[in-house]
Length: 290
Image (cartoon, rainbow, N blue to C red; front, side):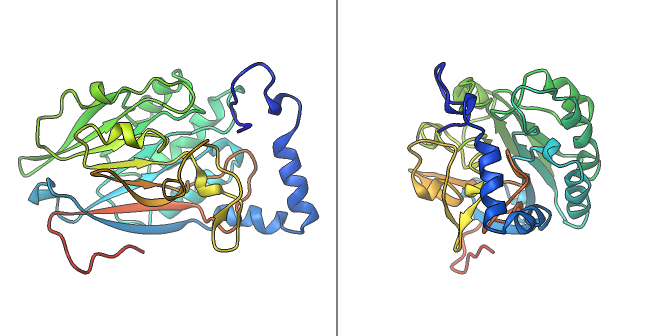
């Protein structure tokens, strides 16, 4: 409720929330462990059986990175790049928040994205999050990451297409447009939606998307044992949408706990994640996720 709050008298203008959190970790003797955890990046596979997925894409491995906040710790970029280099993937999507601050120079974060982009599949796209400025688009696209601003694109295999649609940030800038993002997608063709926050899941479910990939929540980032979150940067979001798999009406979805760390370089009981979404055409009684 403090992060990018509304109105003139926002709490974070007067209370150093991030520094208080760091102090709390130090008092509890957890600061070193929490910082070390940001480098322990899990690779998590999720299998999805999509009714309209073309046969040419059966087994397709779609990597998702999210909430890198890459300028929070300069060493993290190389750590993430090294981890990605070991992971087989056919395409990659980045669901927003490349930088940590929302008011400082975004230049350092753009420079730190270069080693990460250098190890990704040539098929890669991103969207903007609530920490991102529109000026970043030129830098990211110049470095080889097309940004979808209420737009769609397609990957072609053996004459068949898988569509990727991306909307602009809904959480803070409120400039998302699902109708426009889907406008060029042919009727009844499979389309995966990128939306930084899972907040508008109900609205998104009224459109013809097959799977929605989000982030923003960081899964809580600093959690109790068992992964129970203490704080979520979204008001009135039901627990199932804060982390992991979910369904909203007929729309399948996934909220990444994030690949980086936000505000403070620390994670507890909520590991950072590179997600591999394995797309399948035919349902199986033994569908599993790790």
